[in-house]
Image 1 (tube, rainbow, N blue to C red):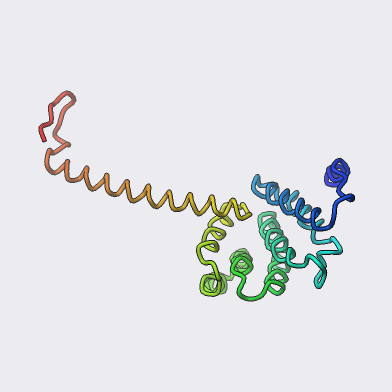
Image 2 (image 1 turned 90 degrees about the vertical axis):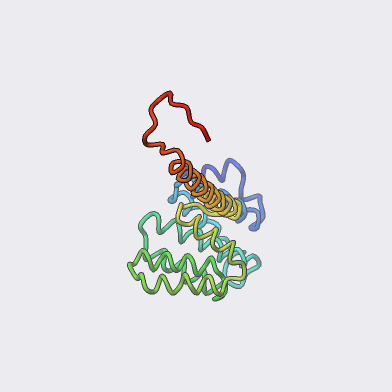
Length: 196
């Protein structure tokens, strides 16, 4: 497959399991960011199949992130049942306070049409999450199909910028209403002089 050829080109077998997992996670995030969910799924799966990432193994702390990211990819590909399994396992392995895992599980509930359960899970995610702002950025990012901490921060920054821009537009609209009532802009013709 294309993945075997790519890994052969970088001699991935010469790298440690941790390095292989890191490469797969980073590359998978890039593939997901550009909406190649099938490729990202393959990369996350490769990393999850490494012996050192098995439950109880040396680098098992990487598993929940890989599973949560693969959940999103599988949702985007329409593989809801597989996504549900990944989300459940990710949440089970990371613990019930992991906001990202809860958010992914909520997304699965949305895909299944379980809106009430999804709403409860998203509320639970926000109340249990240790870092609520990061969770909100991740949820925003999940809605745009990307993943990763840097991308989540960018999504959060974009959301803040959008709120600030909306507030500025409201302020401008209020000023224009004031000017309109003072000068009656609707009655002006091109070339008329305005005295304030």
